[in-house]
Image (cartoon, rainbow, N blue to C red):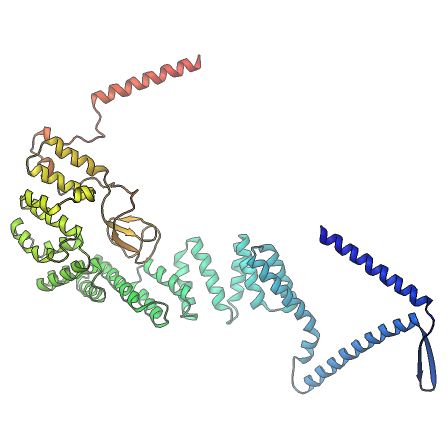
Length: 498
């Protein structure tokens, strides 16, 4: 408002100054005398000013004519675009100004203004490789996907903008959930620009979701070559892809190839627990038990895990509990102070019916780290030592609502998985699962350890008084309470209607 008022005042002052100056010139005496070719011209003051203005205009026209003459000479000498550039110079200036205004409008989130400026720039410049990109991005900002797609397809016609068009169409298909077409577009974009990191990541994710593990490993190798991925991270993720390929081969019953892939995955990343388990099973099937033990021990040294213990038990499936306890000593000698080692030793002692040793092995874990597994183990120990049913059920009641303990959890979204997978089932993150404690707010929803229930509550032939009645089972007393509540609610409704 103030700036508009200031401009109006400035305009009035300029007009007043010009008017006053013209009045002085009209009243002034004298002027300019010009002698040319024996002739003499005398100009008054106002006439002198007008002559000076006409002289400036004449000089400007003369310079323009000289520029045109230079352009014609260049055209005669072989510069075919010299004359065209001379006449389009002003249009280019206006076009590039509109183009810069469009880019600023796009950066500030003004989609409609950016699109208008892009159309204006295209009218002056006739450079679609510049203006179409602004038009497409402005259309996407406004939610006009049809216009954006049309412009991206126009960009495909020029080799200089082909990658931009393919990338734009790929992102559109991804937003629509059409991953099959997006994968083909990503492959095309990758072929055009293999060093483009975003395209590498998108292609790797789509190939993994499509279980194209060989293609994903090639893409991963390209990321390493172009410097987009550290060597240690590449080694780990290549092992994940090799393991995933092995799992698919097992599902297709091509066991020989699967074993080889699993062993390769374990070689690439010995700390990858699923790879160690699968490689050990492959050695067991081949009868190479020592190799299986070596693989499992090496993985256990890095991180003890119940899956490793399960495969270690498969090496000698027919041994007695006492023999198993003795054989597991070689495994438990590594990371003996780890929580998983203590819980495993407690389970082995419970199976061998050495309940005091199981209590010593478990230690204070039930108090310091109460979760479904530790509390269930305490219930089993109490049952084995002859504790009363109320004590055993007390431990079981705590186990039902306790945290579930360590699980395969996605580092991106904290989604809990029942088993390891290369891609998170929730956020689709690649190689984001870690074996760790879930967040505090996530409680157990899986109930009790099914393998421990026969030992805790007895076999099916045990007396009914030892069984645990499910909390959801209706009783006669519960039916009476529910009936009384219904009657009371009906009476309150009648009083309200009155």
